Image (tube, rainbow, N blue to C red):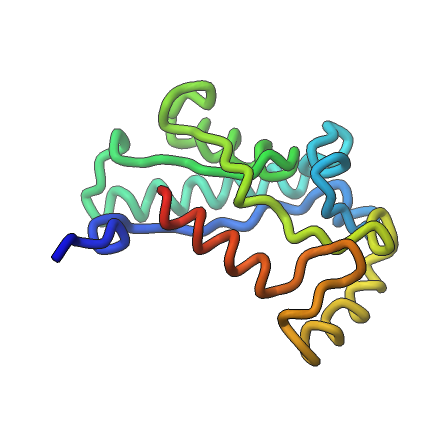
Length: 158
């Protein structure tokens, strides 16, 4: 029986730091908006990413994991690119090098055009829909099940 790649790999998952959309109270979930430079990390988010990188570095040392075994995968959204770049810098990894890779399937859940660039207050509508049926898609967006499927495929390939 073939060994699953999940057995030999360890995964650390890091959410992006506080972003400019977080500060503005905006939902930014489309690829078109999410990749815009204006929606990268806020200064507080840069500090959070720095601390996360330091924490990760400590974890690597405590577990005797060589830095050359580390791969940083991130979505193309500017807030996650920015977070990954800060963490890579803390670890002294070249961000443009082979150990850092953008993976489109790691992107934000797309909530659909009726929620895009709207107030964070609209999240309550999405969560209510999700609670009723995780397979139901917001109009033009992704369901919880869609995201699970996308991420399962992603981790199966990395």
